[in-house]
Image (tube, rainbow, N blue to C red; front, side, top):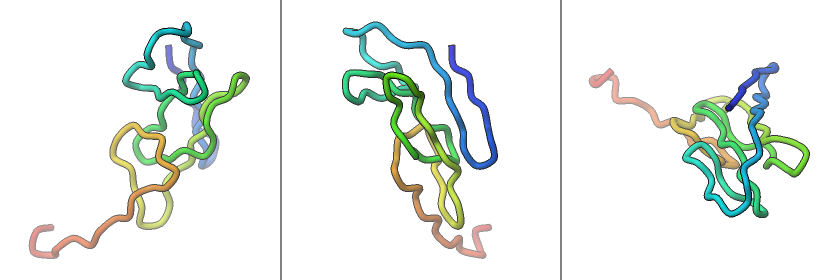
Length: 86
């Protein structure tokens, strides 16, 4: 079960621990033998989960974005749209 809480610009994601020996699900990534939850769209990784804490994600700012679950340390830069195509 996954719980997501938004506190100002920081999202806290709570998750159940997995049993060692199993691969992380599509909503997690492995680091130091643990499965950490991925950050949601529009956010990036601020701090990996630890044995006692969960992944901490922060919102993308300025002209940056993420469009999928991720553990990016930086958001991607937005490009300027062609006014004819908008």
